[in-house]
Length: 242
Image 1 (tube, rainbow, N blue to C red):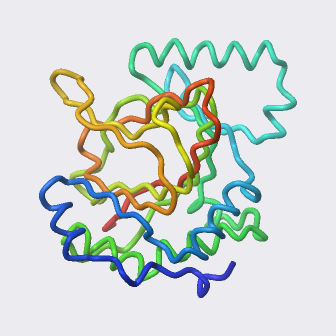
Image 2: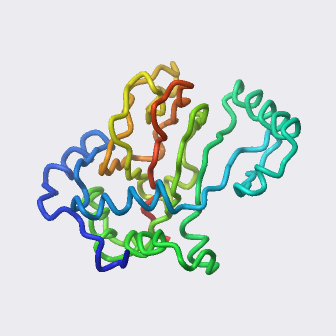
């Protein structure tokens, strides 16, 4: 896949999208890419991405383990680490999921064969930055952070706000590439009332859908259920004006 092969859907109604975001600080845009582009991105995520298992250490910090490191680890040691992650999650601290840091990998020259790098370049192209500017009614966006994610059974992200959301992080986004997701499978993007901690809205993963929202709203990803029939595949990050 080359960056020239990545095409946005030319039929997007930007006026309506902009109005919805202005009113709600949230908008969900189906069919954001041309179909052939979305199919290629889905294939890259499902079949070609060298996932790392990412989790928050109970004492702070983030651990990223390659698939080889996970397989080589003593099962008892791995379970002990997961017990710590789950204990911290009872205090609303932490996350665990499969991920790949797209920007860092491209900058560091890692995995140069990956077609995923073309997607990273496109997300930082003027075409995608201009789409972000149109959605949030701002100018000056100059960077898009990107992380590929794959939430499997039991994976989650506890409620939080995006630090830096009042400065350089202008809006959060999720590009979804999951088909046929069922509500009971979990994995929903949830927005939470700061005071009552009630869930005010929740959105299931969808295919070829761009979600843009104000990262200063409290949000989470609910745990993927043990009977989920698929993984939750997405690319997530922020529109920035560093």
